[in-house]
Length: 153
Image (cartoon, rainbow, N blue to C red):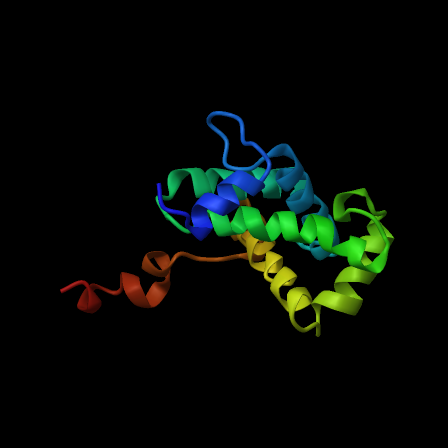
């Protein structure tokens, strides 16, 4: 078996239970990030549900590179140790918020990479029917200009 980055990542990353995409620590990290990034969010969704939505999305997909998301979440969990603060999911909400604001928002290098978690959080929070209803999203085919008979030809 050739030594690839994928093989190394699978060896180093925490174990995943059958039928799941994330290890429990990765799911906890994503939920902890969602708690911070969705403060003031108009969609009434919990952080654990955001993580579950992302996991369902990834389980349905067939990307050979999805393991990179697991690497990202593991990196996010452990990078606060560089600042002698502890693991991300073990920090208080305020400590996590401060870390995100101070390091992720305008960060460089590893911090900029960690900031990519916002895309996962937004996918999990805004990627469903509840969010569509809450923010008033109208699917393209239901919009008035697409229902006009002259456009249906």
